[in-house]
Image (cartoon, rainbow, N blue to C red; front, side):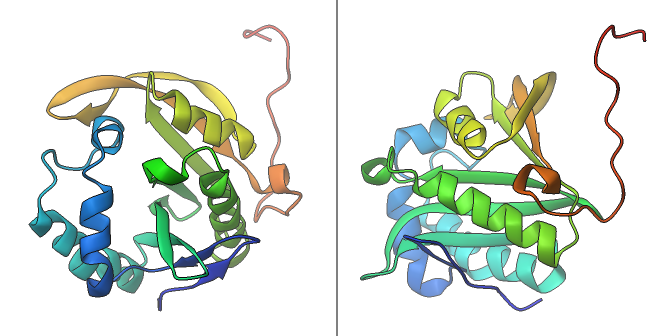
Length: 195
């Protein structure tokens, strides 16, 4: 698939390439990004090159991962990054980070909603999952503001810097954004777990 550019009220969401390598490298030097994401630490320039020149274009080309840089349209200043990784034919996992100087402005939440809507409509996705290491409160706040339902904690579900860690899990469905699903959804009845 060719890379898709999306626009929101305040952002230009476009793929990143070689011209963005230095900007991505500088942004990821933020200790908070390295603490909460599964990127290599220390994050070297070669990692940024591999990301912008190989990982991102390959993901779009083979349909396995769709990555956008989140830019302010005037001057194209990078405010964050977002990716959707396909987990099955009908589900994807979303991941994101925001640059320190742009956190708290709602940019990432805006981008999460745009990417999810695009996936539901254009990829026929029926579930977008969000996962974050337990304790990553900013990521959880973005997921909640975007309308994700928090489903629980998965024990030992991710590896970060060589250590297995628990993570929170949430989901967003097309119906959460008033969109149709590709298949009918029948939620479990509420009440007792053995009902």
